[in-house]
View (cartoon, rainbow, N blue to C red):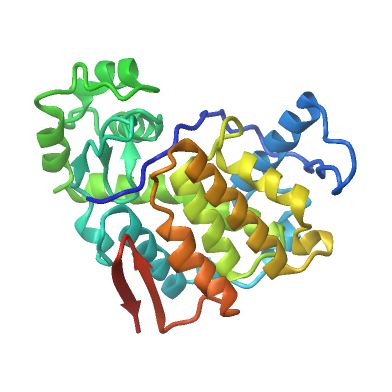
Length: 302
């Protein structure tokens, strides 16, 4: 497994859907919004992103009229392949259910198809939900330890048995399905929904998805919603009347800066030699054949 590092995110409860709109950050040159308004803006954006497809909201009509984009089966498969090249150095993401390793990024163990981390709450959330549905699973006995190390890089209570237990459970179809469901509901679907509401096409939807995977769906620190807010201060989204390439370029700039600020030696291939190249070439629909480089390795999807 070769990964640039998962970033800690703050988990928030999903708020019941209502007629919610996000606040628009101040235009360039205007005063920055206050801390309270900024926090509410991020929360509102998160609520909009996490609304289920069956929930009624002012956004439902927009989403219903939008083309499938990244949610189309072939594009979704492509998205998982690209993310897998960054998370596990492979295009065959289905080989990663049982992967587990501490890569030394301070997030504890990184595991599974999307790089769930013991230190960033998403792995704990996955195991808790899976245990409610399958109480006798082989990971349930580690729940007290997973809760204790959540938010840290510690292995206390997990070694030496947790990696073997994860690999064994990952052989079961039920746990594989649980990993995919958690990936979709926590990362993929919210990212695609919000990107569509921002007026972004398939590439922009992937840009949001990959950022949410690496930076986490949080509204604090350098979580996804913070990065989006910073980008919106530099350029308007297409939904606000802005130009798509200009906005995505600003978002990638913000994201790259956040990655380097966290660790100056962090590899930024997933931005520099993948998404940035596709943007510069005008491939806003993420059409194949698609080529990119990740950590010096070349990949291609015909």
